[in-house]
Image (cartoon, rainbow over all chains, first blue to last red; front, side, top):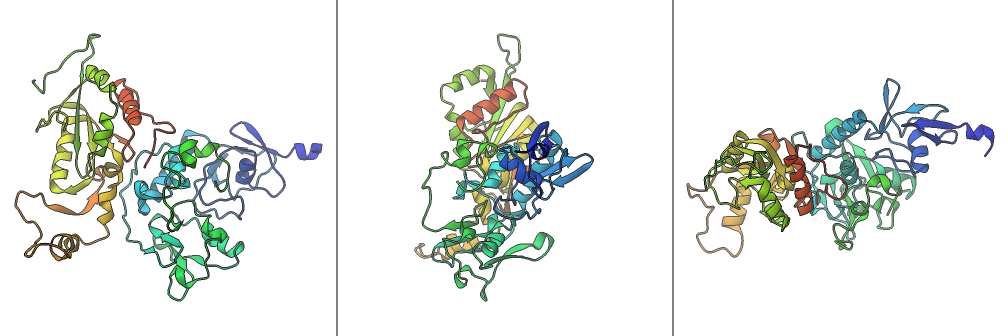
Length: 238
Length: 191
């Protein structure tokens, strides 16, 4: 590494984090093995900047780390009581806007929403539950779509478009009415060319896109985030 | 036993009074409570049980801690919850159903009248003349199941379905020792 490269560091909670030109604060942090909570960001995809869970403080500004370009000498605060509290509130909003019944969800223990809420110390929802009426799409022979758990991270949208070249998914509507769309004349998954081998089939951070006829292959209590907190796990798929 | 007597510990501290109830729950949280096993003997040196399925007291007295399992699916649940809130200095929502409605709340997007008719009157295999129960002693059902914090102020949430015995024990020890309860990794669970 040249001396010019060695100067390319920013400061995260008092630690030096190296970065390469063009990298975001979250990407460099993740590559350095440090943890900033996030949901809609994934190292394989361009940032979406929508969930705001990765919000950090830079001076007087609160900005999402996933869209913030790293610059030399930048001073970033992430692990503070203030940000922990704000992230917890964001997570509580996500929980009450959907129907997140963890005990009956096959994704429990492998769910990034749940694991991030554990890490933020979220014990209750704080807000009133919306209990929205959302359909389950069981039309596909091999994949179940339970939209009750969708947090609108758009990772399936990006994976289907950018990796699979299919654009099976899209986000439609506005504000609180934003929802996941299936791009087929019927609006059902069975009428798309979606396949279980698609990247979009394995990218969902919560329990929306699930393979059928597979349950409890790994017992509750022994799953990825049961074994260790999300802050200590590798980025990406288990 | 006088349920409202205030008793002292050998070190001079007052023995705490603890009440528990199960509203729209399955008693799984209470079973998990019993799973603290021999630690119950340590617990009863520190607390006296007030109204609880463990004592079968029907009325609640003034308590330090109230543990509420289950959400609200009937007017009776709401009444019991309000009595607990009025009598407990610290009220705790225990388990998934008390915290977000849990499994009973999965009926919330369905029409209550249609559910009752489907289950008790129209389902195949029922005896002739089957009807929706309407005994006046049955508490009226709420249109939607609610978590308890939507009706009363809740001081702490103890999540899990059920919370593990270790989580319950850790939580109670924090409360009894005057600490803000904290559940670390492995004890904070929603499933």
